[in-house]
Amino acid sequence: MVLSLNSIRACLEGAVPAVIATCARDGAPNVSYISEVHYVDSCHVALSFQFFSKTRQNVLDNPRATVVVAHPETGAQYRLAVRYLRTEDSGPLFDCMKAKLAGIASHSGMTGVFRLRGSDVYRVESVEEVPGTHSTRAASEPVGLAEVRAAMARLSGACDLAALLDGLLDELQCQLGVSHSMVLMLDAARGTLYSVASRGYAESGVGAEVRPGEGLIGAAAHARIPVRISHATSEFGYGRAIREDARRHGVAAGVDAEIPFPGLPESQSQIAVPILAGERLLGVLFAESPQTARFGYDEEDAFAALASHVGAIASLLGEDDEPPSESARIPGATSPGGATLSVRHYAENDSVFVGEDYLIKGVAGAILWRLLRRHADEGRSDHTNRELRLDPAIRLPDLSENLEARLILLARRLEERCPSLRIEKTGRGRFRFHVLRPVALQEIPR
Image 1 (tube, helix red, strand yellow):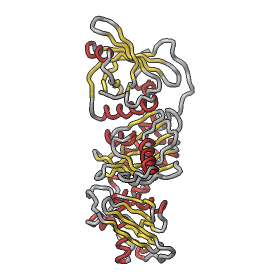
Image 2 (image 1 turned 135 degrees about the vertical axis):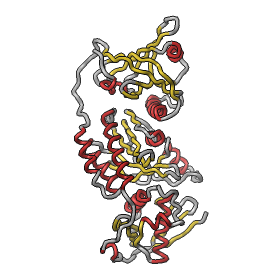
Image 3 (image 1 turned 90 degrees about the vertical axis):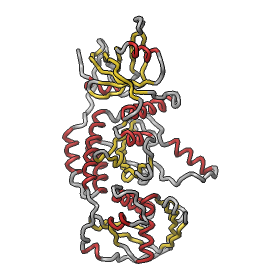
């Protein structure tokens, strides 16, 4: 029976090694395993090119080959007649396959051995089931379009960015049963992604950072395409271990203050999807699970649809000031009391410490320090987004930078780590800064 490539997408997850058969110019056959068979579209797959092998030489001489893949749950095997077209050594396809191959290498203990040289693109000319390999299984519940549609409708009603991002994670949990997820926004000036919302973790990890190109999240941001793996990785554990070891041995110089990334200790499946507004990267939606092969193509499609919807809405949510409400004009009734809070600001990178504890850095740190200075010097509590955007002391990198996301990050870090300082939204583009204890400010110059 001739099948479509879409009907066997589950066989292209890499859970079961695939096999390729090629033929040399003199007719001598060659059979070997392939690390990765990647679904490109309904007519094409890409195979990982890692070594200058006999297989590689054969397809350059004779572009026709046969690939056999297996279903990870039923064991059913399928034969693909393919024809080699080209090799890509850069771009989104290559970056995606490189990230997945890194996961395979980590899982198999072959990190440093597996290195992707290129993505060999093949046209799939036919797909057929290998006789005698079919078996039945209980059908898994697919991701329903109705649930995705309902989630998108509810997200459309978000009144601000915080409600939109929280709503996205709530919908993943309620509609798709995803227990561990987070949203990271892009700080283009510093070249990092920072977490602003999460679900399911003992520690929220708000403010934790990832660099584009680093791990699964970074790969999705760099390539601007969904990246998904179905087995254990250690993408952040190694970096944290190095930092902790350095601190234990007193080697603190050059080790930046870091908010721990709230990853699952035994993550078996991960998916990262970029959030885009047109061509502009806003952030990344990430989810993980202790269950092997938790995220398939259906989940990837659902995540991509929701991320695209959120990106479009986020680009339309304005930050312009609105007239303050009557309640916003009433000054805060609570006067500072209790022990003095010591707050230290390092001008070099705008990092802020409360006592001896690291709180925040970067633009969010600059905003906090400006709010504290104005409260101390002028007694000001009410502020607008507009004045922050235009304030040269904050050095916001670009007017297109999402200031609202920085305020969400700052408000949530204060709520978790320093409840004596609080940001309260009083209208669109307006907020009040509450200082509930006396504060002693110390500036550390560059």
